[in-house]
Length: 234
Image 1 (tube, one colour):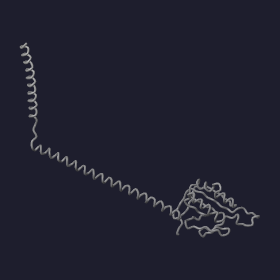
Image 2 (image 1 turned 60 degrees about the vertical axis):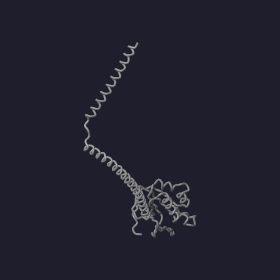
Image 3 (image 1 turned 45 degrees about the horizontal axis):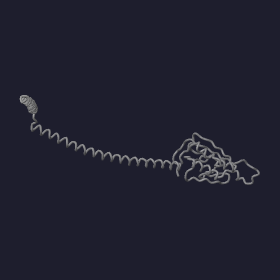
Image 4 (image 1 turned 90 degrees about the vertical axis):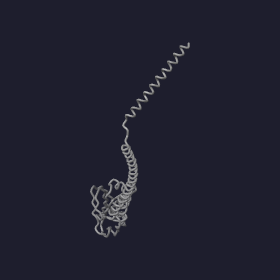
C-alpha cells in the first residue's frame, strides 16, 4: 500500500516538473523573440512623435477648414436666395412695365383675336326717333369693356388704337374716337384668345343680345392676324 502511494506521488511530481519546464521554455523562447526585434532608436522615436503631432495638427486644420467651408456654403445659399428673390422682383417689374407700355399703346402688338362690326339698324318709317336704331357710344363702350374684361391685350375702333387716355363721344350719326370722327359701321378689333373673347360676347343676355335688342346689327368674326402699331407721341 505504501509503495503504491509513493509511486503515485512520484508520478504527480513528474507531471508538475514537466509542466513547469514547458512554461520556462516557452517564456525563454518569447523573451528571445522579443529581444530579437529591432529596438526603436531615440531618433526614430522623435520622428514618429513628430509625425504623430503633425497628423493631429492636420486633423485640427481639416476641422477648421470644414467649419469655414460650411459657413461659406451657408453664405452662398443665403446670397442665392436673395438673388432669386431680386430676380423675381425684377421679372415682375419687367412684366408690369410691358403691360403698362402695352396698355399705353407704346409697343407694337400682333396676334389672334376678334373683329366686331356694329351697324345701324334698318330704317323703319314707323319709328319717329331715328336714334332708336343708330349705333351710339354706349353701344361701342359695351363691346370694348367686355373685350377688356375678357382679357384682350389691345383694342381698336375703326383702326384707332385705344389707350388709357382714349375717349369716345357720339355726335349725331358719327362717333368720335380720340378726336377722329367715324361714321357707321364701327369695326372694333381686339387681340386676345378668340374663343374666350367670342364666348364672352355671345353669352345669353350679354352684350350681343343687348345690342340686338336695341336694333343694332351685330357681326362677330374671329381673326388670325391682327396687328396694332405703336402710338407715336402722347
